[in-house]
Amino acid sequence: MVTATRWRSRSVAPPVAAPAPSPGCRVLLAEDNAVNQRVAVLMLERLGCRVDVAGNGLEAIDLSGRLPYDIIFLDCQMPELDGYGAARAIRRARGGGPGSRSSR
Image: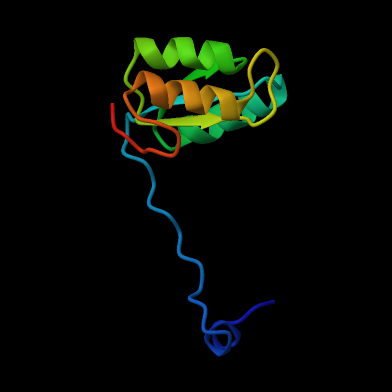
């Protein structure tokens, strides 16, 4: 078990819990595994999020162009188009290049 003292001795701040998303935030989840989809959707809905699911990268690109999402979760390895390719395409469609973090 790591203690606060041990963290200080390494000159590293202890982990801080991220704030919960705003109730009603819209999330796009791109995941090809049905079990992972169910687990992630349940977790996100418990946080108050509205979740849409895409089964592959091509579906994620299509859905991201139809609705404004607050956050998009992309699985890295999916059929049709992986998460990396989908992220590049979504960024380009939103007017940003690779590595940009442009808003809607």
